[in-house]
Length: 152
Image (cartoon, rainbow, N blue to C red):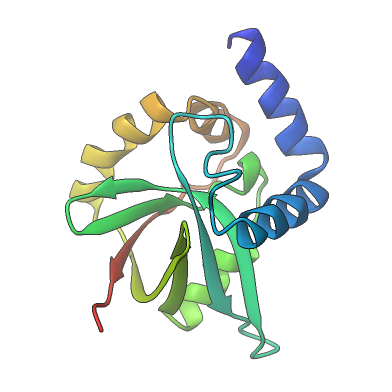
């Protein structure tokens, strides 16, 4: 792991809540003009799910990979054992809202098929090398999620 990736790994695994909150706020205020990436080669979107326990909207900045008409996100949770809350929320309610730049739209989320995951995972790791480290850090299979934006 090169020094830049090592620093990003340490920051992402030590102070994620503050980092996510700050990233989300700046992204929203700037309409995605600022913090449109998280230091990797991947762009960032804001994913809003419905809390499975509270019913309240929950928003997270996440890297994504455009793949044809869909967008691909990774439920890595920085390599920690449990799945991230946003992933559990969208498995309970797959209708989500995404913001890319200043554009917001509805989308449907689903788990990538094994064939899709096999095709997408190498691309994801090439663009975000931390995913490989997160995969080594956990015993769970890291879910790859496909978002299908809905047109109005």
